[in-house]
Amino acid sequence: MTQYERMKAGLIYDANDPEILAIQMPFLDRLWAFNQLRPTDYAAKQQYMKEVFAACGEGCYIELPFRANWGGHHVSFGSNVYVNFNLTLVDDGRITVGDKVMIGPNVTIATANHPIEPSLRARALQYNKDVAIGENVWIGASAVILPGVTIGPNSVIGAGSVVSRSIPANVIALGNPCRVLRPIGPHDRECFFRDEKIDWEAL
Image (cartoon, rainbow, N blue to C red; front, side, top):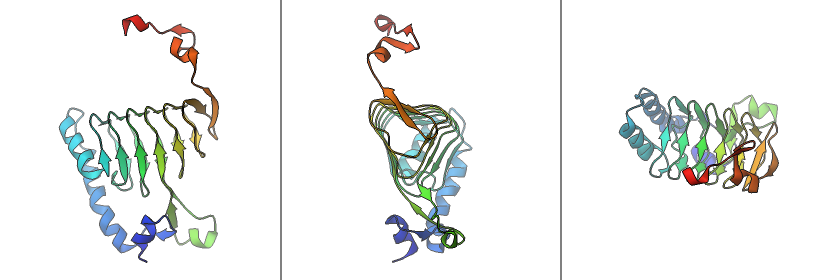
Protein backbone atom coordinates (compact mmCIF):
# COMPACT_ATOMS: atom_id res chain seq x y z
CA MET A 1 0.00 0.00 0.00
CA THR A 2 1.42 3.40 -0.97
CA GLN A 3 1.54 6.33 1.44
CA TYR A 4 -1.17 8.06 -0.61
CA GLU A 5 -3.38 4.96 -0.33
CA ARG A 6 -2.72 4.90 3.42
CA MET A 7 -3.71 8.55 3.60
CA LYS A 8 -7.00 7.93 1.79
CA ALA A 9 -7.73 4.95 4.08
CA GLY A 10 -7.33 6.99 7.30
CA LEU A 11 -4.19 5.12 8.39
CA ILE A 12 -0.95 6.53 9.80
CA TYR A 13 1.13 7.77 6.87
CA ASP A 14 4.00 10.01 5.80
CA ALA A 15 2.55 13.34 4.62
CA ASN A 16 5.94 14.26 3.10
CA ASP A 17 5.89 11.32 0.70
CA PRO A 18 6.95 12.51 -2.80
CA GLU A 19 3.83 11.10 -4.48
CA ILE A 20 1.57 12.95 -2.03
CA LEU A 21 3.48 16.23 -2.42
CA ALA A 22 3.33 15.97 -6.21
CA ILE A 23 -0.48 15.80 -5.99
CA GLN A 24 -0.83 18.40 -3.22
CA MET A 25 1.46 21.22 -4.36
CA PRO A 26 -0.47 22.29 -7.50
CA PHE A 27 -3.52 22.88 -5.29
CA LEU A 28 -1.44 25.09 -2.99
CA ASP A 29 -0.22 27.11 -5.96
CA ARG A 30 -3.83 27.63 -7.03
CA LEU A 31 -4.75 28.60 -3.46
CA TRP A 32 -2.02 31.27 -3.47
CA ALA A 33 -3.52 32.77 -6.62
CA PHE A 34 -7.04 32.52 -5.16
CA ASN A 35 -5.97 34.62 -2.18
CA GLN A 36 -4.88 37.44 -4.51
CA LEU A 37 -8.43 37.96 -5.81
CA ARG A 38 -10.28 41.19 -5.14
CA PRO A 39 -13.50 41.17 -3.08
CA THR A 40 -15.42 41.95 -6.28
CA ASP A 41 -13.95 38.97 -8.19
CA TYR A 42 -17.07 36.96 -7.37
CA ALA A 43 -17.05 34.86 -10.54
CA ALA A 44 -13.39 33.88 -10.09
CA LYS A 45 -14.10 32.79 -6.51
CA GLN A 46 -16.96 30.64 -7.72
CA GLN A 47 -14.77 29.13 -10.42
CA TYR A 48 -12.08 28.20 -7.89
CA MET A 49 -14.53 26.47 -5.56
CA LYS A 50 -16.19 24.59 -8.42
CA GLU A 51 -12.88 23.41 -9.87
CA VAL A 52 -10.79 22.72 -6.75
CA PHE A 53 -13.26 21.62 -4.06
CA ALA A 54 -14.50 18.04 -4.04
CA ALA A 55 -17.99 19.54 -4.39
CA CYS A 56 -19.52 23.00 -4.15
CA GLY A 57 -23.17 23.99 -4.42
CA GLU A 58 -24.62 27.29 -5.59
CA GLY A 59 -24.38 30.61 -3.80
CA CYS A 60 -21.25 29.91 -1.71
CA TYR A 61 -18.95 32.77 -0.71
CA ILE A 62 -15.53 32.92 0.97
CA GLU A 63 -14.02 36.09 2.41
CA LEU A 64 -10.26 36.04 1.84
CA PRO A 65 -7.73 35.10 3.07
CA PHE A 66 -8.52 31.39 3.08
CA ARG A 67 -6.03 28.70 4.14
CA ALA A 68 -6.23 24.98 3.41
CA ASN A 69 -3.60 22.23 3.40
CA TRP A 70 -4.96 20.91 0.10
CA GLY A 71 -6.50 24.15 -1.15
CA GLY A 72 -9.96 22.78 -0.34
CA HIS A 73 -9.53 19.74 -2.58
CA HIS A 74 -10.97 17.42 0.10
CA VAL A 75 -13.79 19.84 1.02
CA SER A 76 -17.45 19.51 0.04
CA PHE A 77 -19.73 22.55 0.42
CA GLY A 78 -23.49 22.44 0.07
CA SER A 79 -25.34 25.50 -1.24
CA ASN A 80 -25.36 29.01 0.24
CA VAL A 81 -22.39 28.46 2.56
CA TYR A 82 -20.88 31.71 3.88
CA VAL A 83 -17.29 31.82 5.16
CA ASN A 84 -15.89 34.88 6.92
CA PHE A 85 -12.22 35.97 6.97
CA ASN A 86 -9.29 33.69 7.87
CA LEU A 87 -10.86 30.25 7.67
CA THR A 88 -8.19 27.56 8.09
CA LEU A 89 -9.02 24.06 6.84
CA VAL A 90 -6.60 21.26 7.62
CA ASP A 91 -8.19 19.31 4.81
CA ASP A 92 -5.89 16.31 4.53
CA GLY A 93 -9.04 14.33 5.31
CA ARG A 94 -12.58 15.05 4.11
CA ILE A 95 -14.52 18.06 5.39
CA THR A 96 -18.24 18.09 4.54
CA VAL A 97 -20.25 21.29 5.08
CA GLY A 98 -24.02 21.31 4.61
CA ASP A 99 -26.33 23.90 3.05
CA LYS A 100 -26.69 27.36 4.61
CA VAL A 101 -23.79 26.95 7.04
CA MET A 102 -22.28 30.20 8.37
CA ILE A 103 -18.64 30.17 9.50
CA GLY A 104 -17.36 33.13 11.52
CA PRO A 105 -13.91 34.74 11.25
CA ASN A 106 -10.73 32.96 12.34
CA VAL A 107 -12.28 29.48 12.51
CA THR A 108 -10.09 26.36 12.20
CA ILE A 109 -11.43 22.99 11.07
CA ALA A 110 -8.82 20.22 11.30
CA THR A 111 -8.92 16.63 10.08
CA ALA A 112 -5.22 15.83 10.55
CA ASN A 113 -3.74 14.51 13.77
CA HIS A 114 -0.45 13.03 14.94
CA PRO A 115 0.19 9.86 16.97
CA ILE A 116 0.84 10.24 20.68
CA GLU A 117 3.67 7.67 20.45
CA PRO A 118 6.84 9.84 20.40
CA SER A 119 8.83 7.72 17.95
CA LEU A 120 6.05 7.99 15.34
CA ARG A 121 5.58 11.69 15.94
CA ALA A 122 9.35 12.28 15.59
CA ARG A 123 9.01 10.96 12.04
CA ALA A 124 6.27 13.57 11.36
CA LEU A 125 3.72 10.84 10.65
CA GLN A 126 0.03 11.68 10.79
CA TYR A 127 -3.49 10.33 10.23
CA ASN A 128 -6.76 11.98 9.22
CA LYS A 129 -10.30 11.71 10.56
CA ASP A 130 -13.14 13.32 8.63
CA VAL A 131 -15.25 16.25 9.89
CA ALA A 132 -18.94 16.73 8.99
CA ILE A 133 -21.01 19.86 9.63
CA GLY A 134 -24.77 19.62 9.14
CA GLU A 135 -26.97 22.09 7.32
CA ASN A 136 -27.85 25.48 8.78
CA VAL A 137 -25.09 25.34 11.42
CA TRP A 138 -23.54 28.58 12.69
CA ILE A 139 -19.92 28.36 13.84
CA GLY A 140 -18.87 31.38 15.91
CA ALA A 141 -15.65 33.35 15.56
CA SER A 142 -12.34 31.65 16.47
CA ALA A 143 -13.91 28.24 17.08
CA VAL A 144 -11.67 25.20 16.58
CA ILE A 145 -13.19 21.94 15.31
CA LEU A 146 -10.97 18.90 15.81
CA PRO A 147 -10.58 15.65 13.80
CA GLY A 148 -13.46 13.19 13.71
CA VAL A 149 -16.13 15.64 14.89
CA THR A 150 -19.70 15.77 13.55
CA ILE A 151 -21.97 18.78 14.22
CA GLY A 152 -25.68 18.14 13.79
CA PRO A 153 -28.03 20.33 11.71
CA ASN A 154 -29.19 23.74 13.01
CA SER A 155 -26.77 23.83 15.93
CA VAL A 156 -24.77 26.88 17.03
CA ILE A 157 -21.14 26.65 18.15
CA GLY A 158 -20.18 29.54 20.41
CA ALA A 159 -17.26 31.83 19.65
CA GLY A 160 -13.89 30.54 20.86
CA SER A 161 -15.11 26.99 21.44
CA VAL A 162 -12.82 23.97 21.04
CA VAL A 163 -14.98 21.18 19.63
CA SER A 164 -13.29 17.89 20.48
CA ARG A 165 -16.40 15.69 20.47
CA SER A 166 -19.46 15.51 18.24
CA ILE A 167 -22.39 17.88 18.89
CA PRO A 168 -26.03 16.86 18.26
CA ALA A 169 -28.59 18.73 16.17
CA ASN A 170 -30.64 21.74 17.35
CA VAL A 171 -28.50 22.84 20.28
CA ILE A 172 -26.30 25.69 21.41
CA ALA A 173 -22.86 24.42 22.41
CA LEU A 174 -19.84 26.35 23.64
CA GLY A 175 -16.69 26.29 25.72
CA ASN A 176 -13.37 24.50 25.95
CA PRO A 177 -14.02 21.66 25.66
CA CYS A 178 -17.24 22.46 23.80
CA ARG A 179 -20.36 21.16 25.57
CA VAL A 180 -24.08 21.49 24.94
CA LEU A 181 -25.47 24.50 26.82
CA ARG A 182 -29.13 24.02 25.92
CA PRO A 183 -31.46 23.04 23.10
CA ILE A 184 -32.69 25.66 20.67
CA GLY A 185 -36.26 26.36 21.82
CA PRO A 186 -39.28 28.69 21.92
CA HIS A 187 -37.36 31.64 23.39
CA ASP A 188 -35.06 31.64 20.33
CA ARG A 189 -38.08 31.98 18.06
CA GLU A 190 -39.33 34.90 20.14
CA CYS A 191 -36.08 36.81 20.78
CA PHE A 192 -33.01 37.44 18.60
CA PHE A 193 -30.67 38.78 21.35
CA ARG A 194 -31.32 38.20 25.03
CA ASP A 195 -34.87 39.54 25.50
CA GLU A 196 -35.08 41.69 22.35
CA LYS A 197 -38.12 40.58 20.38
CA ILE A 198 -38.01 39.44 16.78
CA ASP A 199 -40.31 41.64 14.68
CA TRP A 200 -41.53 38.77 12.50
CA GLU A 201 -44.12 40.92 10.69
CA ALA A 202 -41.33 43.15 9.28
CA LEU A 203 -39.14 40.30 8.05
